[in-house]
Amino acid sequence: MTRLAGPLGNVVTYSPAGNETPGFILIISGGGKPVMASAKTATANGGLLLRRAIWEEIAPAQREAAERALREATARALDPSGRLLEAARLRRAAAVARLAGRGRIVRALRVRPVWRVVIGLGEQTPAEIGMSVHGTYGVPVLPGSALKGAARACAREDYPESYGDYGRIAFGKEPGEARRAGEETGTDEDAGESTGDEVLADGRFMFLDALPELPAKAAGTGVEIDIMNPHVPEYYGDPAAAAPAEYQQPVPVAFYTVTSAVTFTIYLVGRGHDPDLPELAASDDEDGPVAWLSTALRDRGLGAKTNAGYGYFSVEIADTAETTAAGPARPKDRR
Image (cartoon, rainbow, N blue to C red):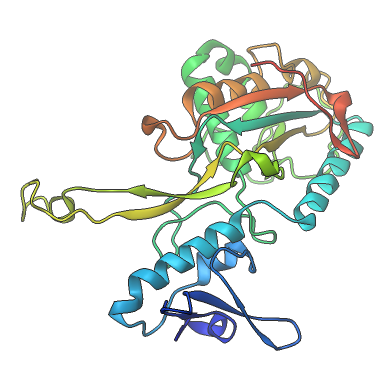
C-alpha cells in the first residue's frame, strides 16, 4: 500500500490490485473510520486531487496502475455534480440579477462544447497536465481572463474597424500599456455617471468566470481522460541528439477534457451607468463584446488544441430579463 505525499497521505492511499481485492483509493470518513472507495467514486475536491496529489515511494510495479487509479479518481471528482455547485450557480445568478435591477448592464450566454474543451492545460501540477478549476468547488471553469482575451483577439483581428472605435471602451488599455498614476481601474461596485469619453484601465465590461451547469444524467460524463501520443519523444527532447524516427518508443500522456455534456453560463457585467453601454452590449450588433465573444467561441475556439478540434462551442444568448434569481431561463437560440 502506498500513500499520497504530504498531508493528503493521511486520507488517500492505494492498494495494488489482486485476485480478490481491486485497486482502490482509501478515504477516511468524517468520523475517522477508514472507508474503501473505488477509483470510480468521487470523494474529494477535484482541484485538490489535481494540484496536490502525487504518490510517494511507489513501487515500480505499482506505478502505472496507481497513477491510473488517481487519474480516474481525479476525473470523477472534477465532474460537475452535487448540490454545492447548484447552489453556487443560483447564488451567482441572483447576484447578477440584483446588479441588473440596480441599473447595471448584464448579459448572459450559455455555451456548450461542440466536442471537448481543454482549458489550463499548461498549468503546473504534479502530473504536469493542468486544467482551470474553481478553487472552492473543484470543478472546471472558463476563466474570465481567458474569455476577455478571446473576445479581444477576435475583435482586433476580425473586426478591426469596430475594435478601433469601441475596443478600448469595452476592454480598457491595450495589453502592456502602462497605467497613469491614480487612473481608475473600474473595480468600484458603482461608478458615477459617465460621458463615455474616458477609458477605464480595465474596460467597461467585466467577464466573470463561467461556472458549469450540472450535466444531464443521460448526457454522459462531464470530464473525461484523453490521450496525447507523441511518437518521437527523443527528438522532441533534444532535436540535436536524435532524429525523428519510428523506432522511438511512444510515451502516451493523459490529460483531462470537459465534454459536450457540460454547459457553462457566462456573465458580462457593465461597470457604472454609461448611457452607451446598452447599445454596446447588444447581442445582435457586431460592435460589442457579446458578439465578439460569441464569434470567438464559435469560430476561433478557446483553450488548447483548437487545431485538433477542441475548444469550439455552440452559443445561446439570453435576454437580460431572463437572468433572474432563480437562474437563467431557457435562452433564445442565436447560433
